[in-house]
Amino acid sequence: MFCFIPLSSVHKQHIAVASLPQTGSVTMKLDITSRAADLRYAIRDIVVAAKKYEKEKRKTPLYLNIGDPLKYDWSTPDFMIEALHEASGKGRNGYAPSEGEDDLRHAAAEKEKRVNGIDIDPERVIVTAGVSEAIQFLTGSLISEGSEFLVPGPAYPPYISYIGYFGGNPITYRTIEEEGWIPDVDNLRGKINEKTKGILVINPNNPTGAVYDRKTLKQIADIAGEYELPLISDEIYDQLTFDVKQTPMASVVSDVPMVGFNGISKVYLAPGWRIGYVYFQDDGSELEPLRDAMVRQARIRICTNTPTQLAAAVALRSDGSHIEGMLERLRARRQVIWERLNNIEGISASLPQAAFYIMAKVDLNGIWKDDYEFVLDLLHETGVVFVPGSGFCADYGRDHFRSVFLPPVDMITEAMDRLENFMHKKQS
Ligand SMILES: Cc1ncc(COP(=O)(O)O)c(C=O)c1O
Image 1 (cartoon, rainbow, N blue to C red):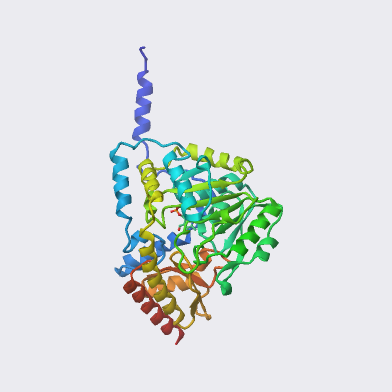
Image 2 (tube, rainbow, N blue to C red):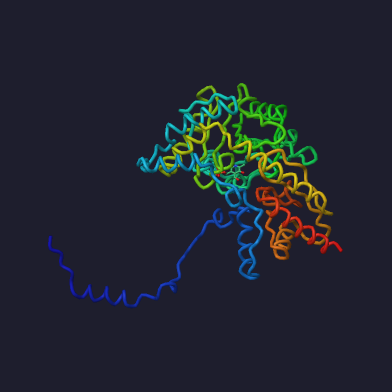
């Protein structure tokens, strides 16, 4: 079809284009939502300050802030790398089902049976881009303006951030430092009201390294049952325990429905693969609306990475023989950091029972206004990077900092030497 464009309009267009301002000088109305602009993630936010330190001082910081073993002297087991090559080489590079590849959903169920002794239905497993995405789907399903959600204090920060992002209020229940950071069940119960949408347990816990005993878990499950609240249990560190074994929440609940979160980032040393999974434990119907809401969100992001799903299935079916060696190395590193921290005046920490974090208390002694200031001052003067405890909970994390004990002993020792000198200098 012939389309007539009058010359005069072409001319006008030409003039309009020619008079456009240079790129970058256009002003525009950008109404960024406060829910996005105010998002915080202490573990990574501190890296901004560390990068600044690196640029200004031209020195590499000693990073002890991030729970990624591959940043240190750990690597993904060879059999998993081979499985990933194979999956991709066999052309399994298309989209996967939104709920996840069947193979991985079955492998997750088999692993939960073999390792944790629990029966989960593979048909009711959702594969997510790490547990992180499961947190997003969960909070996106349950939280609206003014909702409240009970999370342990201190807690892995994205739970707190996502609840706020969706307009809710994260309510932290106390965990008792003097008793190995075990939940204060009365405190938890006292915080339930008509706005409460659920209860989260992180066991083993990040940032405290606590492993909860069966009795405490049962009490929490009973409270969830009594108030008819969904109970969520994040067990991503399930196989990384040192002295006592972890008790899976699903083995404790009898008639209380629960949702389990797990993944391969930590135990299987593949955080960059972005694979997590969610399972639903009920009589087959109570949690169905929640599962459905989470799957709907999974559909709009299409799927998670297909080859890593197939390789993750191989990992979950393995005998986990890499884990014992991993625990042995972690145990030695835990001992060094725990002893060193407790020998520094003004610092104390309880012995973590799991994972690779230690939550240390610091006596601010009027020298620093809060734990943020302490961590930044330490970074500035020594290059050592910890995460401020308040980043995990403003109430129950303050006056603390979290360190990982993933690095080799010489790096931990170097960080502790610098910390010790810093504390000595500041206090004298
Ligand atoms: C308790 C807890 N849950 C979930 C995650 C996120 O794991 P993923 O890599 O599976 O997203 C972490 C990561 O540090 C964590 O500590």
